[in-house]
Amino acid sequence: VSANARAEDMRLRAFASKKAQIDKMGEVDALVTSCANCRNVLEEGIEHYGMDLPVIGLSELLADYLTPEERGEPPEPA
Image 1: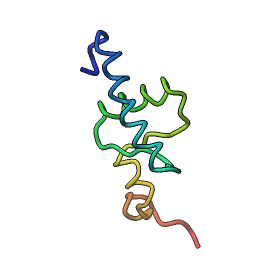
Image 2: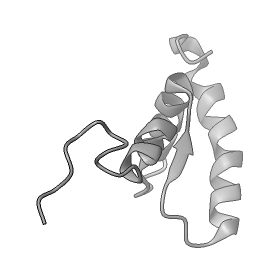
Image 3: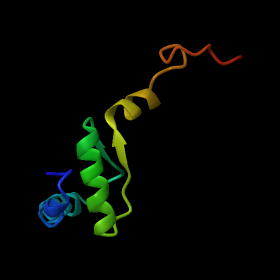
Image 4: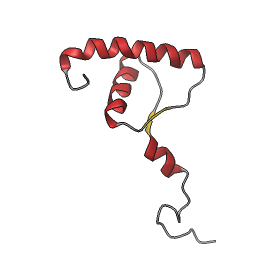
């Protein structure tokens, strides 16, 4: 459905229910997804509804918490 331009209205109506869930939760820092297609749909809905909320890939989130050694980088000098 996300690749079908004729389904844009349906995607945005479906996102309205996600927006209601997000609004009900209160303060939300970000949305996290492991699916690139879902990320595109979420970003489209966020833009449409004028929300200020980042969408983060699960791998990005995990990478932010890895140590330099776990990322394959040399350790930082002391």
